[in-house]
Length: 399
Ligand SMILES: [Zn+2]
Image 1 (cartoon, rainbow, N blue to C red):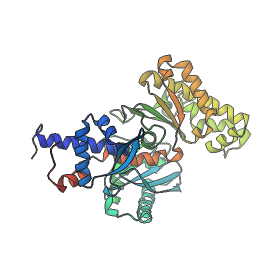
Image 2 (image 1 turned 90 degrees about the vertical axis):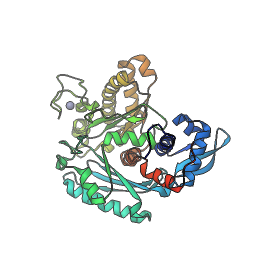
Image 3 (image 1 turned 180 degrees about the vertical axis):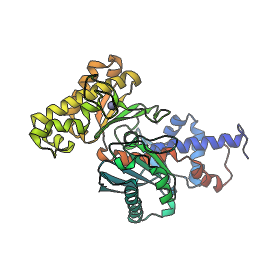
């Protein structure tokens, strides 16, 4: 076997660095690979040729800054990944390949009170349907990313109690879905997946440090630090919804009082508009009325923005991200919510941190989480299986 530090193990490590860089970015030019990995242009060139001969990557001519270049992507045929996103009232499934192409996507409404087993039955059937619709070979599916709006025990994969999916507490949807589909399943919460989706496909492309703020039935943040999701040892990093804004404010589901969530989450703010707009009002409806000029809806959205901005200011002082991406339906309110967020950041954050921060709406809308589930598989899958193809294709030329 390989000895650490030997030429063959160094070579394998270099192959892995190149594959990882391409896997995370979708496609890169050889110059970009050199920058991302710190390898020399000549080494990158040799490694790319070897990976191409082994069928792991595909190389296509492109141009970068007006010069001819070679774009490197993982082979579309090298594997298929699936993403499954459970929301409060929906189930969304997408199929993609390792070249970051989305092959098929589908959404269904989901009964809020459905049990975990019923939800997973539906997910299993949808994945099967999409595989058939996309005309791909089931044996090519190498992994599934699964998103749930619930706290997750990092070690066991079990879900904590959640008001959003009441029938799921204590279940282990990761192991259950893996047993049903016969492939590894990677599990994460919706805010982290939204951050990953926007990082790989949306408003966070090329950004190393960002926060994705999801405001829906709860308020959460997915944090990306140095290009990686930061989860913390217990998996609870990013619980921005439970920053205290008012010690004598409303009692929160976490047991504290006056958390940001009690000033921003749908179940707290929509009732403010029930007397004027009826009890059936949704966040989408509130945003639509606000865009049409309704003063009550505009006022509520502005207040929500101001409060989120206080939370973002704290985040900004602690982590100094360069971008904050607002996700969920609230982001469709555009400047009606982004303006008040920026005003609060300008007021409460350290000026040097606030100056470097851009507050933008998500680019992926409601698709952020399911695309993030695909990105989760791409980031967690490891490169061993991919490289085995290349290494089996021939004795590697030492680079
Ligand atoms: Zn709370």
